[in-house]
Amino acid sequence: MSELIATLRRLIAESAPDPAQAAPVLTVADDVPLDTVIPFSSLIVLGTVVAIEDELGIRVTRHDVARAAGAGEGATLRRLAAMVEEIRAR
Image (tube, helix red, strand yellow):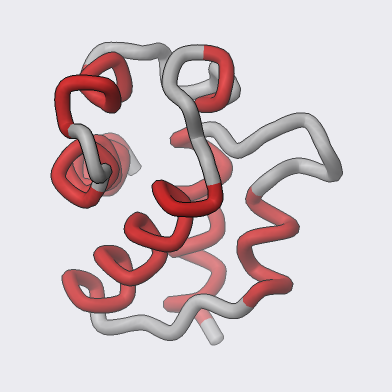
């Protein structure tokens, strides 16, 4: 999973409208809600989903993203990685 989390870090940083603003994602602990360290706005989420779909060749649904957000607790790198692994297992 650590390789997948490293990929997610890179994809989030690269897909953000302002990569400098998203740079903290490169070093944040994988269980910290992303919106506490970067403005994990809908634009960044959309860019991240598109980047995940393109790079990893999977389809991410709204339901997948909602589950990764942890019932309002906020998306973490670990939850996003679990989402990707769950989608791959379908």
